[in-house]
Image (cartoon, rainbow, N blue to C red; front, side, top):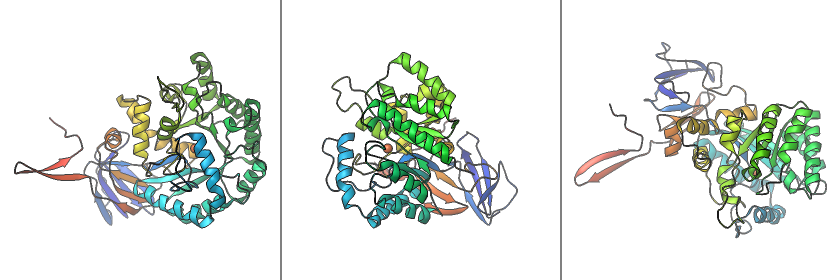
Length: 426
Ligand code: FE2
């Protein structure tokens, strides 16, 4: 073997597992592998997981915080207006430079696959060309999947549908949309039909910003699910955000969830952004605004957590850390039970990998040797500590290392080491 990782704990709970790697693939996974590696890595019981996957991001806007000014109200609408102010000043080089810097952050965080929306409303398609260039450049170490996103509305913004189709022809992977931002509810529904039919004709996946609103009557997810069913696109369509579901009538939702399940529509919540942007005009009680994650999981709907933004017109925080995203999602959705907490870890690993259609993802023989080792003993501890990613591997090569998070105390003449992992007693 090129490499054997010893004594790993896997995200599914198996302990003291060895992982044998040869020719950039995982060859064997099990206890006490007899094979010897040219390189031997002792995990010492640490969690070894398949890499983090971010199912929802905006790489064309990332790290542009403060350009040309800061979002004073902190609202979604001022963010969209701010992005429109910034667009004329964008250059391909600046977008690519910021995106590449972000990809370095992502790799160091064990985040090796990102689905990024890219705005196609600028007829120059500067951001599209910039991110297609970035996608090629980062391919050795990060899977970047691009969504053609008509930020200003595919019907509302003149020429947007033509621009979207040009972006797809240039190599963008997925068809996006934003029905709640069209002029009327009916035009929003029409945009969903238009874009789904176009994607079905091209054999492409769909991922729409859908109902990112506090308006309980914003119900485009229903049309998205119905179109998915009508066009036979089960398993290839995703509704992102779906925040209006937080405010919807419960009886209506009891009908909507089975429709989403039947249609095979996946959902992506973006907890950091939803908790920040939604309920913004409420007084008290103030809505959380995140979609109904535990209820959708219980109904058999795939739910991933995305990061959405990092230091851009909408959000001035973030650093590519999907454990921070899972941590926020777990709290906002009150998913603190053991099984629910594990589901939050899957929402930033296995589930988004399926939504993106990643091939060879996982810790199993035949999968790509892509993995992350964490300074934690299990997925719940990883979320609690937003654990240090001590080692990140891509195609069998170590591409990032970091020291474990320990502090040496000296209190009352008693030197000691602080280890934030839970000590196992008895
Ligand atoms: Fe988004």
